[in-house]
Every structure is written in C-alpha cells, then in structure tokens.
Amino acid sequence: MSMTTEEAPFAAVQAVIGTYFDGLHHADSIRLRQVFHPQAIYACASGGDWLYRDMETYFAVVDQRVSPASKGEARRDRIQSIDFAGPDTARAVVNCAIGDSYFTDFLTFVRQNGRWQILAKVFHSEPL
Image 1: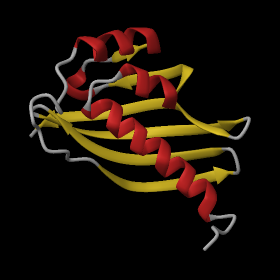
Image 2 (image 1 turned 90 degrees about the vertical axis):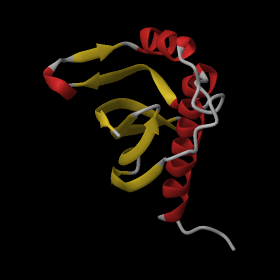
Image 3 (image 1 turned 180 degrees about the horizontal axis):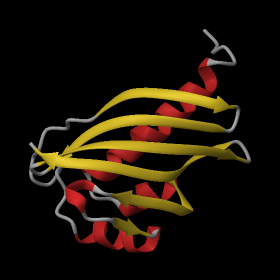
C-alpha cells in the first residue's frame, strides 16, 4: 500500500520524532544531531526561570546525562499531535519523561532539501 501525499509528510515527521525520542531515552547526542537543525532554538520558562541553549550547549548537557535506558526506565513518550502549516513547516506536541520529570515539548519542524528537522524546541517540565 502506498502513502497518499498527505500521509508521506506526516510519516516523515513522525519518524523524526521517533529518532528524537530514541536520542532522549539513550542520552545520545549523535541521534539528536540527526533531528535538530544546527541553528535550532532550545528554550523553557518552567518555574519562572528562562532557559535558552544553543545546540552545542544542549548536546554537551545530553552527553553528561545518565540515560533513562541505562537505568532501566520504561519509555513514557507519546505524540499528542502533528500539524502542518504548509509543505515545509510543521509543529508537533509531544510528551516524554526523563527521571522524575515529565515534559511537554512544542517542536517546530522545517523541511529543507526534502529533510525534516527540528528548528525549535520550547518545552515545559514538571515533576512526575
């Protein structure tokens, strides 16, 4: 069965999100580098404090993290929604847990040269 033109972009973004979740669960910046645009924005305002990181700073933090996978944590990730603003722009709302924190991520995607990448991650975290 072949995909319709509407299903193909959805499946492509869904696959990027799958790699994103894998990268988070395994604390694997190599996987995360595959899905984030090099100039992506990483930001959070949870708890009243503004947090902004460029990608290199974020990847360094990931590299220092003990992965949920190595601690035997069950995966608790899910895609709430994926919306398209045109053929090359999408937004997803996803959830995951790392340690005792639960995250809601707003991920903005762009497609360049046929490749979908996360251009912005703005998230909220709260204790489980």
